[in-house]
Amino acid sequence: MFLRGAALFGLLSLAHPFPAQTLLDGSAQPCADVKETTSGVPGVHVYAFNARKIPAIRRSLFVLDSLDWESGDPDAIRAASREYDRLLSLVRNARTLGYATSNGNGDFEITVTQTDSVLVFGEAKWPGEPFYYSSKVVGATGQEEVRVVLLMCSQQLL
Image (spheres, rainbow, N blue to C red):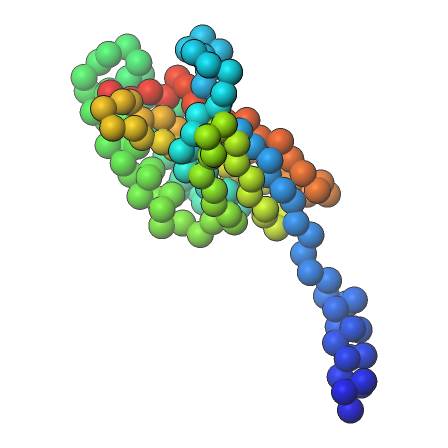
């Protein structure tokens, strides 16, 4: 009886193999023009999403990218701040493929189920400092490891 059960389980596992995994090997880095050290940015909260299943997050990122708040226009800065708060709410309520926090060197690793498009989103906020975000879409199909560099710059708000 036990042998038949084990044989059946073995056949089922061949017919339905476990999904392959991909390691997102990443680093949160400051921009080259503001780099004061050679290390990365520690304490960045990094989320991985199936890009096709989070249209609201992608839309919010597009809105933030289209606002001209860098010119110092107070209305644009307020709109960007509101949209960033909305984005963080969407991110925290969405189903992730994985999550990590960058270490003291800015490095992070997230293992995800292989997916055509993975949106990697990183955000950080330091007391008394501007907050930062960065995102990148990467393919995670047919590869054991994908390198991701999140540039934590040019999205400084406040």
